[in-house]
Amino acid sequence: MSSNEIRARIQQMREKAQELKAAAERTEDPEERKRLQEKARRLQSQSEQESMLRGGDIYPTE
Image 1 (cartoon, rainbow, N blue to C red):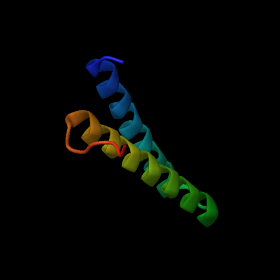
Image 2: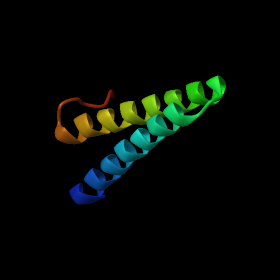
Image 3: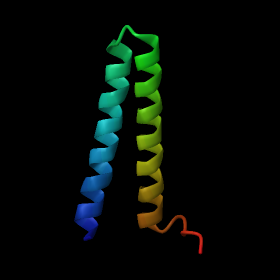
Image 4: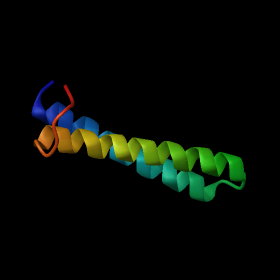
């Protein structure tokens, strides 16, 4: 995967996380809100980890 593809994937993950956060704010159902917030949190965390890994800030465990 090229650097541009990786950056695009990370950006898509961040955008999806924002969409999920917005959807959570709009929903009336507390359980659905919690589920969407958790999914957004996991996706945001994953995008941050991939970004740091690709940026050389962290190294995978061996």
